[in-house]
Length: 165
Image 1 (cartoon, rainbow, N blue to C red):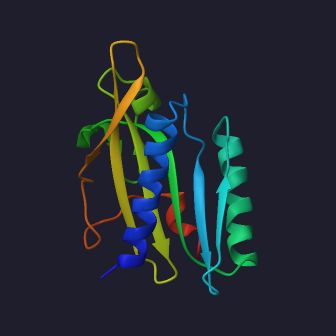
Image 2 (tube, one colour):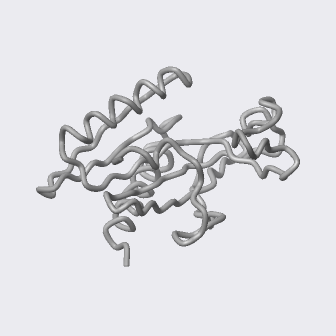
């Protein structure tokens, strides 16, 4: 049903596997694949150091997508994840009550590769892979893990969902 988005996600996963496992690079540059209305493809790496730079990159990429008439895209990056309990959330503001409970600060965090793919219709698909390291702290494989929701369920709040709007 969403073959074009599944294909973009498979490409994102293959890219992460190649960079982190096969080439043994220490990190994965946040990477976009943009597809325009003429089926032309552009790959863009967008490193950032902090939230301010990430917001700047998001604005620039949104502009580039409009300029290039992008109709579908994927995005892949490394991230920390952790399970959050309901009592930790401020539901009205849609954020954690205590910023120190963000995954990067938690002992129960997991190191992941996360990818999403979206198109102009507003459909967004997600995939994630757990980063597995050996005793020398080298990445040895990526294990795909199910995402906690599907296309038909509530999608996460994300700046990535707004890129083609």
